Image (cartoon, rainbow, N blue to C red; front, side, top):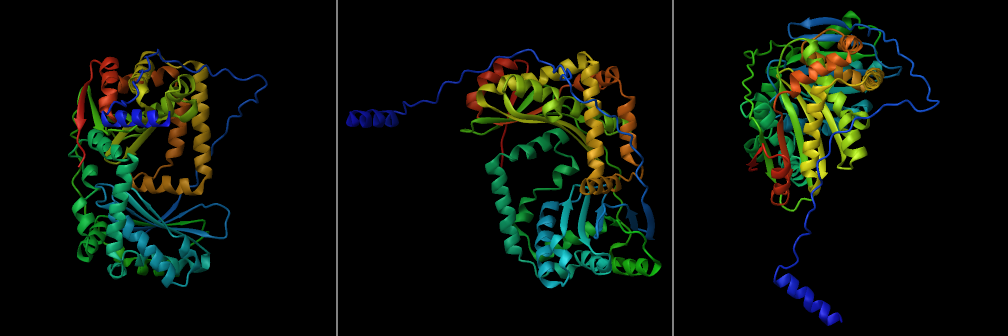
Length: 477
Protein backbone atom coordinates (compact mmCIF):
# COMPACT_ATOMS: atom_id res chain seq x y z
CA UNK A 1 0.00 0.00 0.00
CA UNK A 2 2.82 2.36 0.92
CA UNK A 3 4.65 1.55 -2.35
CA UNK A 4 1.49 2.24 -4.35
CA UNK A 5 1.05 5.61 -2.68
CA UNK A 6 4.64 6.57 -3.43
CA UNK A 7 4.26 5.55 -7.07
CA UNK A 8 1.07 7.59 -7.41
CA UNK A 9 2.72 10.60 -5.79
CA UNK A 10 5.73 10.32 -8.09
CA UNK A 11 3.54 10.12 -11.16
CA UNK A 12 1.60 13.13 -9.98
CA UNK A 13 4.76 15.21 -9.53
CA UNK A 14 6.38 13.99 -12.76
CA UNK A 15 3.39 14.72 -14.91
CA UNK A 16 2.47 17.97 -13.10
CA UNK A 17 -0.93 16.37 -12.72
CA UNK A 18 -1.52 17.83 -9.24
CA UNK A 19 -3.33 20.93 -10.42
CA UNK A 20 -4.37 23.83 -8.22
CA UNK A 21 -7.77 23.53 -6.64
CA UNK A 22 -10.44 24.87 -8.96
CA UNK A 23 -11.76 28.14 -7.57
CA UNK A 24 -15.47 28.64 -7.10
CA UNK A 25 -15.92 32.38 -7.35
CA UNK A 26 -18.25 34.15 -4.94
CA UNK A 27 -21.39 35.59 -6.54
CA UNK A 28 -22.29 39.28 -6.44
CA UNK A 29 -24.94 40.38 -3.94
CA UNK A 30 -26.84 43.61 -3.51
CA UNK A 31 -25.29 45.93 -0.88
CA UNK A 32 -26.66 45.73 2.66
CA UNK A 33 -26.94 48.72 4.99
CA UNK A 34 -26.71 48.51 8.80
CA UNK A 35 -29.90 49.25 10.72
CA UNK A 36 -28.42 51.01 13.77
CA UNK A 37 -31.31 50.01 16.00
CA UNK A 38 -30.48 50.89 19.61
CA UNK A 39 -30.22 47.81 21.88
CA UNK A 40 -32.79 47.42 24.64
CA UNK A 41 -31.80 49.24 27.87
CA UNK A 42 -28.77 50.82 26.18
CA UNK A 43 -27.55 53.97 27.97
CA UNK A 44 -28.37 57.28 26.35
CA UNK A 45 -25.60 59.02 24.43
CA UNK A 46 -24.61 62.21 26.20
CA UNK A 47 -23.78 65.06 23.86
CA UNK A 48 -20.35 66.46 24.64
CA UNK A 49 -19.95 70.22 24.80
CA UNK A 50 -16.64 71.10 23.17
CA UNK A 51 -14.67 74.15 24.12
CA UNK A 52 -12.22 75.92 21.87
CA UNK A 53 -8.59 75.01 22.41
CA UNK A 54 -6.44 77.63 24.06
CA UNK A 55 -4.70 79.41 21.21
CA UNK A 56 -0.92 78.99 21.14
CA UNK A 57 1.39 81.83 21.95
CA UNK A 58 3.59 82.39 18.90
CA UNK A 59 6.70 84.54 19.08
CA UNK A 60 8.82 85.18 15.94
CA UNK A 61 12.50 84.74 16.78
CA UNK A 62 13.79 85.47 13.27
CA UNK A 63 12.24 85.79 9.79
CA UNK A 64 12.09 82.00 9.41
CA UNK A 65 11.98 80.77 13.01
CA UNK A 66 9.09 80.92 15.49
CA UNK A 67 8.65 79.88 19.11
CA UNK A 68 5.30 78.31 20.01
CA UNK A 69 3.98 77.76 23.52
CA UNK A 70 1.01 75.39 23.70
CA UNK A 71 -0.83 73.66 26.57
CA UNK A 72 0.36 70.18 27.50
CA UNK A 73 -0.85 67.24 29.57
CA UNK A 74 -0.33 67.18 33.36
CA UNK A 75 3.31 66.12 33.56
CA UNK A 76 6.65 66.98 35.13
CA UNK A 77 8.18 66.90 31.64
CA UNK A 78 8.07 69.44 28.84
CA UNK A 79 7.31 68.48 25.26
CA UNK A 80 10.12 70.01 23.18
CA UNK A 81 9.51 69.77 19.44
CA UNK A 82 11.67 71.14 16.64
CA UNK A 83 9.42 71.19 13.58
CA UNK A 84 10.63 71.79 10.04
CA UNK A 85 7.87 72.41 7.48
CA UNK A 86 7.96 72.85 3.72
CA UNK A 87 4.45 73.97 2.68
CA UNK A 88 5.20 74.58 -1.01
CA UNK A 89 7.23 71.49 -1.88
CA UNK A 90 7.63 67.94 -0.52
CA UNK A 91 10.78 66.86 1.25
CA UNK A 92 12.83 64.71 -1.10
CA UNK A 93 14.47 61.43 -0.07
CA UNK A 94 12.84 61.59 3.33
CA UNK A 95 13.32 57.82 3.69
CA UNK A 96 17.11 58.29 3.50
CA UNK A 97 17.09 61.25 5.87
CA UNK A 98 14.87 59.42 8.36
CA UNK A 99 17.31 56.51 8.45
CA UNK A 100 20.23 58.88 9.02
CA UNK A 101 18.42 60.73 11.80
CA UNK A 102 17.53 57.46 13.50
CA UNK A 103 21.19 56.40 13.51
CA UNK A 104 22.15 59.88 14.74
CA UNK A 105 19.63 59.59 17.58
CA UNK A 106 21.35 56.46 18.89
CA UNK A 107 24.77 58.13 18.72
CA UNK A 108 23.49 61.15 20.63
CA UNK A 109 22.10 58.89 23.35
CA UNK A 110 25.55 57.36 23.84
CA UNK A 111 27.42 60.64 23.67
CA UNK A 112 25.35 63.16 25.66
CA UNK A 113 24.72 63.08 29.39
CA UNK A 114 21.01 63.83 29.04
CA UNK A 115 18.69 60.99 30.14
CA UNK A 116 15.66 62.27 28.23
CA UNK A 117 17.47 61.97 24.89
CA UNK A 118 16.83 58.22 24.97
CA UNK A 119 13.19 59.03 24.21
CA UNK A 120 13.96 61.24 21.23
CA UNK A 121 11.34 60.60 18.54
CA UNK A 122 11.39 61.31 14.80
CA UNK A 123 8.10 62.09 13.05
CA UNK A 124 8.52 62.42 9.27
CA UNK A 125 5.83 63.32 6.77
CA UNK A 126 5.89 64.58 3.22
CA UNK A 127 5.75 68.27 4.23
CA UNK A 128 7.00 68.24 7.83
CA UNK A 129 9.75 66.67 9.90
CA UNK A 130 9.49 66.84 13.69
CA UNK A 131 12.14 65.90 16.25
CA UNK A 132 10.66 65.54 19.75
CA UNK A 133 11.98 65.23 23.29
CA UNK A 134 10.28 65.10 26.67
CA UNK A 135 12.57 66.57 29.30
CA UNK A 136 12.43 68.31 32.70
CA UNK A 137 12.18 72.13 32.50
CA UNK A 138 15.73 72.42 33.86
CA UNK A 139 17.08 70.63 30.77
CA UNK A 140 15.27 72.79 28.21
CA UNK A 141 18.31 74.62 26.85
CA UNK A 142 20.43 71.48 26.63
CA UNK A 143 17.61 69.70 24.79
CA UNK A 144 17.28 72.58 22.31
CA UNK A 145 21.04 72.47 21.68
CA UNK A 146 20.83 68.75 20.88
CA UNK A 147 17.88 69.26 18.53
CA UNK A 148 19.84 71.98 16.75
CA UNK A 149 22.89 69.69 16.55
CA UNK A 150 20.71 67.16 14.70
CA UNK A 151 20.91 69.50 11.69
CA UNK A 152 24.63 70.25 11.92
CA UNK A 153 26.69 68.80 9.02
CA UNK A 154 29.41 67.72 11.45
CA UNK A 155 26.97 65.41 13.25
CA UNK A 156 26.59 63.26 10.11
CA UNK A 157 30.27 62.70 9.42
CA UNK A 158 30.53 59.83 11.90
CA UNK A 159 27.52 57.86 10.68
CA UNK A 160 27.91 54.32 9.38
CA UNK A 161 26.73 54.86 5.82
CA UNK A 162 27.33 51.24 4.81
CA UNK A 163 24.91 50.21 7.54
CA UNK A 164 22.42 52.83 6.36
CA UNK A 165 22.61 51.54 2.78
CA UNK A 166 22.01 47.98 4.00
CA UNK A 167 19.06 49.13 6.08
CA UNK A 168 17.46 50.89 3.10
CA UNK A 169 17.99 47.81 0.90
CA UNK A 170 16.49 45.55 3.58
CA UNK A 171 13.42 47.79 3.91
CA UNK A 172 12.95 47.59 0.14
CA UNK A 173 13.02 43.77 0.21
CA UNK A 174 10.64 43.64 3.18
CA UNK A 175 8.16 45.85 1.34
CA UNK A 176 8.35 43.63 -1.73
CA UNK A 177 7.87 40.50 0.37
CA UNK A 178 4.91 41.86 2.35
CA UNK A 179 3.10 43.25 -0.68
CA UNK A 180 3.67 46.89 0.27
CA UNK A 181 4.68 47.55 -3.33
CA UNK A 182 0.99 48.15 -4.04
CA UNK A 183 1.22 51.44 -2.13
CA UNK A 184 3.93 52.69 -4.48
CA UNK A 185 1.89 51.80 -7.56
CA UNK A 186 -1.25 53.24 -5.95
CA UNK A 187 0.55 56.54 -5.36
CA UNK A 188 1.75 56.65 -8.96
CA UNK A 189 -1.75 56.09 -10.30
CA UNK A 190 -3.85 58.15 -7.89
CA UNK A 191 -1.48 61.14 -8.00
CA UNK A 192 -0.14 60.83 -11.54
CA UNK A 193 3.43 59.96 -12.49
CA UNK A 194 4.48 63.61 -12.75
CA UNK A 195 3.31 64.56 -9.26
CA UNK A 196 6.13 65.81 -7.01
CA UNK A 197 5.19 63.33 -4.28
CA UNK A 198 6.10 60.42 -6.56
CA UNK A 199 9.55 61.88 -7.15
CA UNK A 200 10.24 62.47 -3.46
CA UNK A 201 10.85 58.87 -2.32
CA UNK A 202 12.42 55.61 -3.48
CA UNK A 203 15.48 57.09 -5.15
CA UNK A 204 17.14 53.75 -5.90
CA UNK A 205 20.42 55.21 -7.12
CA UNK A 206 20.84 57.31 -3.98
CA UNK A 207 19.90 54.44 -1.68
CA UNK A 208 22.42 52.10 -3.30
CA UNK A 209 25.34 54.54 -3.67
CA UNK A 210 24.79 56.93 -0.76
CA UNK A 211 28.03 58.61 0.34
CA UNK A 212 28.83 61.44 2.74
CA UNK A 213 28.74 64.32 0.20
CA UNK A 214 25.30 63.16 -1.01
CA UNK A 215 23.99 62.88 2.55
CA UNK A 216 25.30 66.32 3.51
CA UNK A 217 23.75 67.80 0.36
CA UNK A 218 20.42 66.22 1.33
CA UNK A 219 20.62 67.70 4.83
CA UNK A 220 21.44 71.16 3.46
CA UNK A 221 18.63 71.01 0.90
CA UNK A 222 16.15 70.03 3.61
CA UNK A 223 17.30 72.92 5.81
CA UNK A 224 17.19 75.40 2.93
CA UNK A 225 13.57 74.71 2.00
CA UNK A 226 12.26 74.63 5.58
CA UNK A 227 10.45 76.99 7.84
CA UNK A 228 11.31 76.29 11.48
CA UNK A 229 9.16 76.14 14.60
CA UNK A 230 10.21 75.31 18.13
CA UNK A 231 7.07 74.13 19.92
CA UNK A 232 7.18 73.97 23.72
CA UNK A 233 4.38 71.92 25.18
CA UNK A 234 3.36 72.41 28.82
CA UNK A 235 5.70 75.26 29.73
CA UNK A 236 4.15 78.17 31.66
CA UNK A 237 6.43 80.94 30.46
CA UNK A 238 9.58 81.52 28.43
CA UNK A 239 11.53 84.47 29.79
CA UNK A 240 13.63 86.83 27.69
CA UNK A 241 17.04 85.27 28.51
CA UNK A 242 15.70 81.84 27.51
CA UNK A 243 14.37 83.23 24.23
CA UNK A 244 17.78 84.75 23.49
CA UNK A 245 19.52 81.44 24.20
CA UNK A 246 17.06 79.53 22.04
CA UNK A 247 17.49 82.03 19.20
CA UNK A 248 21.26 81.66 19.39
CA UNK A 249 21.08 77.85 19.41
CA UNK A 250 18.82 77.74 16.36
CA UNK A 251 20.40 80.65 14.48
CA UNK A 252 21.72 78.41 11.70
CA UNK A 253 18.21 77.15 11.03
CA UNK A 254 16.50 80.53 10.85
CA UNK A 255 17.74 81.57 7.45
CA UNK A 256 15.22 82.48 4.78
CA UNK A 257 13.61 79.44 3.20
CA UNK A 258 13.58 78.86 -0.53
CA UNK A 259 10.17 79.52 -2.03
CA UNK A 260 8.96 77.15 -4.72
CA UNK A 261 6.59 78.13 -7.50
CA UNK A 262 2.92 77.41 -6.90
CA UNK A 263 1.99 73.80 -7.65
CA UNK A 264 -0.41 73.09 -10.52
CA UNK A 265 -2.27 69.76 -10.39
CA UNK A 266 -2.36 68.16 -13.86
CA UNK A 267 -3.90 64.81 -12.92
CA UNK A 268 -5.86 63.22 -15.76
CA UNK A 269 -8.49 60.48 -15.11
CA UNK A 270 -7.94 57.02 -16.59
CA UNK A 271 -11.50 56.00 -17.26
CA UNK A 272 -12.46 52.41 -16.46
CA UNK A 273 -8.97 50.92 -16.31
CA UNK A 274 -8.30 48.45 -13.52
CA UNK A 275 -4.56 48.33 -12.79
CA UNK A 276 -3.26 44.90 -11.81
CA UNK A 277 0.05 44.00 -10.18
CA UNK A 278 0.50 40.33 -11.00
CA UNK A 279 1.70 38.30 -8.00
CA UNK A 280 1.64 34.61 -8.99
CA UNK A 281 1.14 32.25 -6.08
CA UNK A 282 -0.42 34.76 -3.70
CA UNK A 283 -3.62 33.50 -2.07
CA UNK A 284 -5.07 36.96 -1.38
CA UNK A 285 -5.88 40.01 -3.45
CA UNK A 286 -5.04 43.50 -2.18
CA UNK A 287 -7.46 46.18 -3.32
CA UNK A 288 -7.17 49.98 -3.43
CA UNK A 289 -10.05 52.12 -4.72
CA UNK A 290 -10.24 55.88 -4.51
CA UNK A 291 -10.51 59.36 -5.93
CA UNK A 292 -8.14 62.20 -6.76
CA UNK A 293 -10.13 65.14 -5.40
CA UNK A 294 -9.83 68.79 -6.45
CA UNK A 295 -7.25 70.65 -4.41
CA UNK A 296 -9.32 73.66 -3.42
CA UNK A 297 -8.62 75.87 -0.44
CA UNK A 298 -11.13 75.93 2.39
CA UNK A 299 -12.36 73.64 5.11
CA UNK A 300 -15.51 72.53 3.21
CA UNK A 301 -13.57 70.61 0.55
CA UNK A 302 -11.35 68.88 3.10
CA UNK A 303 -14.41 68.05 5.18
CA UNK A 304 -16.14 66.35 2.24
CA UNK A 305 -13.18 63.99 1.88
CA UNK A 306 -13.21 63.24 5.61
CA UNK A 307 -16.98 62.72 5.78
CA UNK A 308 -17.09 60.26 2.88
CA UNK A 309 -14.14 58.26 4.19
CA UNK A 310 -15.83 57.82 7.58
CA UNK A 311 -19.36 57.23 6.31
CA UNK A 312 -18.38 54.16 4.31
CA UNK A 313 -15.02 53.19 5.78
CA UNK A 314 -15.00 53.88 9.53
CA UNK A 315 -14.03 50.38 10.65
CA UNK A 316 -16.76 48.13 12.11
CA UNK A 317 -19.57 50.72 11.99
CA UNK A 318 -18.94 51.84 8.41
CA UNK A 319 -21.07 50.53 5.57
CA UNK A 320 -18.27 48.65 3.82
CA UNK A 321 -17.07 46.82 6.95
CA UNK A 322 -20.61 45.96 8.02
CA UNK A 323 -21.59 44.47 4.66
CA UNK A 324 -18.41 43.02 3.16
CA UNK A 325 -17.07 41.57 6.39
CA UNK A 326 -19.83 41.18 8.96
CA UNK A 327 -22.57 40.09 6.58
CA UNK A 328 -20.77 38.42 3.69
CA UNK A 329 -17.36 37.43 5.08
CA UNK A 330 -15.39 38.65 2.07
CA UNK A 331 -12.58 40.28 4.07
CA UNK A 332 -11.01 40.68 7.48
CA UNK A 333 -11.20 44.45 7.13
CA UNK A 334 -12.14 47.24 4.73
CA UNK A 335 -11.38 50.84 5.64
CA UNK A 336 -11.53 54.38 4.32
CA UNK A 337 -9.12 57.26 4.75
CA UNK A 338 -8.76 60.84 3.58
CA UNK A 339 -5.26 62.17 2.82
CA UNK A 340 -5.45 65.95 3.01
CA UNK A 341 -1.98 67.22 2.09
CA UNK A 342 -0.91 70.65 0.81
CA UNK A 343 -0.40 69.33 -2.73
CA UNK A 344 -2.94 66.48 -2.96
CA UNK A 345 -6.30 65.46 -1.52
CA UNK A 346 -6.99 61.73 -1.87
CA UNK A 347 -9.96 59.61 -0.78
CA UNK A 348 -8.98 55.96 -0.41
CA UNK A 349 -10.76 52.71 0.44
CA UNK A 350 -8.55 49.69 1.00
CA UNK A 351 -8.73 46.05 2.07
CA UNK A 352 -7.66 42.49 1.28
CA UNK A 353 -9.73 39.52 0.18
CA UNK A 354 -9.25 35.88 -0.80
CA UNK A 355 -8.84 34.94 -4.45
CA UNK A 356 -12.33 33.51 -4.84
CA UNK A 357 -13.89 36.69 -3.44
CA UNK A 358 -11.95 39.16 -5.61
CA UNK A 359 -14.65 40.09 -8.11
CA UNK A 360 -17.45 40.16 -5.55
CA UNK A 361 -15.33 42.25 -3.16
CA UNK A 362 -14.51 44.93 -5.75
CA UNK A 363 -18.08 44.98 -7.05
CA UNK A 364 -19.31 45.25 -3.48
CA UNK A 365 -17.24 48.40 -2.91
CA UNK A 366 -18.34 49.94 -6.22
CA UNK A 367 -21.99 49.15 -5.53
CA UNK A 368 -21.77 50.89 -2.15
CA UNK A 369 -20.27 53.98 -3.79
CA UNK A 370 -23.21 54.04 -6.20
CA UNK A 371 -25.73 53.50 -3.41
CA UNK A 372 -24.29 56.35 -1.33
CA UNK A 373 -24.74 58.72 -4.27
CA UNK A 374 -28.27 57.46 -5.00
CA UNK A 375 -29.85 57.84 -1.54
CA UNK A 376 -29.15 59.63 1.74
CA UNK A 377 -28.52 57.65 4.94
CA UNK A 378 -31.36 57.07 7.37
CA UNK A 379 -31.60 59.43 10.32
CA UNK A 380 -30.44 56.66 12.69
CA UNK A 381 -27.38 55.87 10.55
CA UNK A 382 -26.57 59.55 10.18
CA UNK A 383 -26.77 60.18 13.92
CA UNK A 384 -24.52 57.19 14.56
CA UNK A 385 -21.99 58.68 12.14
CA UNK A 386 -22.14 62.07 13.85
CA UNK A 387 -21.75 60.53 17.31
CA UNK A 388 -18.78 58.51 16.12
CA UNK A 389 -17.03 61.58 14.76
CA UNK A 390 -17.73 63.72 17.84
CA UNK A 391 -16.22 60.96 19.97
CA UNK A 392 -13.15 60.55 17.75
CA UNK A 393 -12.46 64.27 17.77
CA UNK A 394 -12.75 64.36 21.56
CA UNK A 395 -10.45 61.36 21.98
CA UNK A 396 -7.89 62.79 19.59
CA UNK A 397 -7.88 66.07 21.47
CA UNK A 398 -7.26 64.23 24.76
CA UNK A 399 -4.20 62.44 23.32
CA UNK A 400 -1.18 64.74 23.52
CA UNK A 401 0.76 62.93 20.78
CA UNK A 402 -2.14 63.14 18.32
CA UNK A 403 -2.78 66.74 19.30
CA UNK A 404 0.85 67.57 18.55
CA UNK A 405 0.66 65.74 15.22
CA UNK A 406 -2.40 67.79 14.26
CA UNK A 407 -0.58 70.97 15.22
CA UNK A 408 2.47 70.03 13.12
CA UNK A 409 0.27 69.34 10.10
CA UNK A 410 -1.51 72.67 10.60
CA UNK A 411 1.87 74.39 10.47
CA UNK A 412 2.69 72.55 7.24
CA UNK A 413 -0.62 73.68 5.75
CA UNK A 414 -0.01 77.21 7.07
CA UNK A 415 -3.28 77.34 9.00
CA UNK A 416 -3.36 78.93 12.42
CA UNK A 417 -7.04 78.37 13.21
CA UNK A 418 -8.35 75.71 15.53
CA UNK A 419 -9.33 73.20 12.82
CA UNK A 420 -11.11 71.04 15.40
CA UNK A 421 -13.70 73.78 15.95
CA UNK A 422 -14.23 74.10 12.19
CA UNK A 423 -14.69 70.33 11.81
CA UNK A 424 -17.15 70.15 14.71
CA UNK A 425 -19.20 72.98 13.26
CA UNK A 426 -19.34 71.29 9.84
CA UNK A 427 -20.40 67.98 11.40
CA UNK A 428 -23.09 69.74 13.42
CA UNK A 429 -24.44 71.53 10.34
CA UNK A 430 -24.37 68.44 8.11
CA UNK A 431 -27.65 66.74 7.14
CA UNK A 432 -28.31 63.34 5.51
CA UNK A 433 -29.22 65.08 2.27
CA UNK A 434 -26.06 67.20 2.33
CA UNK A 435 -23.98 64.05 2.92
CA UNK A 436 -25.61 62.44 -0.11
CA UNK A 437 -24.82 65.55 -2.16
CA UNK A 438 -21.14 65.22 -1.18
CA UNK A 439 -21.26 61.58 -2.30
CA UNK A 440 -22.78 62.56 -5.64
CA UNK A 441 -20.07 65.14 -6.29
CA UNK A 442 -17.38 62.48 -5.77
CA UNK A 443 -18.81 59.04 -6.49
CA UNK A 444 -20.39 59.98 -9.81
CA UNK A 445 -16.84 60.05 -11.19
CA UNK A 446 -14.94 56.91 -12.16
CA UNK A 447 -12.62 55.80 -9.32
CA UNK A 448 -9.01 54.72 -9.64
CA UNK A 449 -8.57 50.99 -8.88
CA UNK A 450 -5.27 49.19 -8.21
CA UNK A 451 -5.10 45.56 -7.12
CA UNK A 452 -2.35 43.03 -6.44
CA UNK A 453 -3.00 39.31 -6.86
CA UNK A 454 -2.55 36.18 -8.94
CA UNK A 455 -3.88 37.45 -12.26
CA UNK A 456 -4.09 34.05 -13.93
CA UNK A 457 -6.44 32.79 -11.22
CA UNK A 458 -8.60 35.88 -10.70
CA UNK A 459 -8.83 37.16 -14.28
CA UNK A 460 -11.96 35.15 -15.22
CA UNK A 461 -13.76 36.44 -12.13
CA UNK A 462 -12.79 40.05 -12.85
CA UNK A 463 -13.87 39.83 -16.48
CA UNK A 464 -17.23 38.35 -15.49
CA UNK A 465 -18.10 40.74 -12.66
CA UNK A 466 -16.49 43.90 -14.08
CA UNK A 467 -17.11 43.51 -17.83
CA UNK A 468 -16.88 47.23 -18.59
CA UNK A 469 -13.47 47.59 -16.93
CA UNK A 470 -10.24 47.07 -18.89
CA UNK A 471 -7.55 45.12 -17.05
CA UNK A 472 -4.14 46.77 -17.36
CA UNK A 473 -1.07 44.86 -16.17
CA UNK A 474 1.51 46.89 -14.24
CA UNK A 475 5.14 45.78 -14.23
CA UNK A 476 7.29 46.32 -11.14
CA UNK A 477 11.01 47.01 -11.31
